[in-house]
Length: 446
Image (cartoon, rainbow, N blue to C red):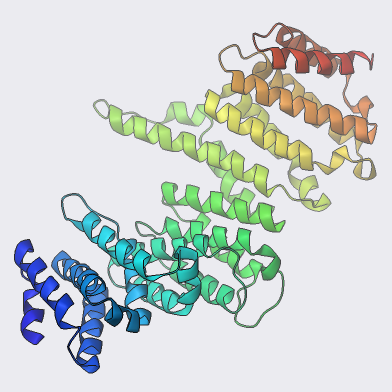
């Protein structure tokens, strides 16, 4: 066996495969202690060696054992299958054969577990241990692989319960600390996935289980990182968690997001220098800035809390930001702003009779109506007109429910009727019909 072991790391792929196949047959007749040592050796190689030849040797040998000595693999399942699960998530690089390794690991895993969900449940503790070890690796690539495996573990295990819920979340939060590295986004997605699936369990106090507050503090810390691509993922994941858990961290999120929106105002963008010959780079930068704006409004809409105090502090400023961007942005950003605006009005407590403040509401409605007319009359994009109509529908429904029509002043009504009249001639019958109904609703008020 030791003679074959040295051949597993041969640089010639044909020789390497031949030795792996031989090893796959040999373990059928070798002593259990020798097989244990071999598999432990392969495990160490995979986790600690960075050269691809070692990782390929592990994939080929374990695959050969599974094919030619399946009983041996079944006996060693608790050691081998967690490694196979991690190996499945190897991030392939071009022309390095890593995709093929990933396929071998996938085959080993799928042939030896009762479905992915069943396999994860069966080997949960071993899977958490090995992915934790990968996250603590000195290699950035292994860290990314561990993050990807942990994300997959979180998504595919469904709704976790204690103690596994605490184990998975603790491992994810532990991996989240420290500097940003390529692939770390997967950890954020995994945390959001776990919290959204298990929010009811997380509201209970359980020993050794992170609370929702602990999770949010860790995620908000990641939202403050400088890397914009990473920040966008962090904000989206944090907003998803806030929406699901109904926690109020709007102030902390606004402190991070408002500067992003203000930095991307047309005046600021226009004043930034552009270098000739860097068109591709400038294009990528514009794309990234647009994505950051989309993310900003999407996150604010999801995080808008049912808290009278917080809403009183931010309702005017948030409305002003949305209205400004509605008149001056690209269609994609406008669509994102309209979706945020809809969420804003759905949750705006001023539109409820018990929280009424006619003067404050009149100011918000006046500003909204003067800007949303641009979207209602947008001739180029049906999606913009549809979403703007949806916002008006929410507004009018809420005003009717709370009997606060007096807050919609005559100028605002006139603006809306003008834009809705244009929309009654739209090429889309469903938009014509909705615009006509909303127009009649406003006209009845006069």
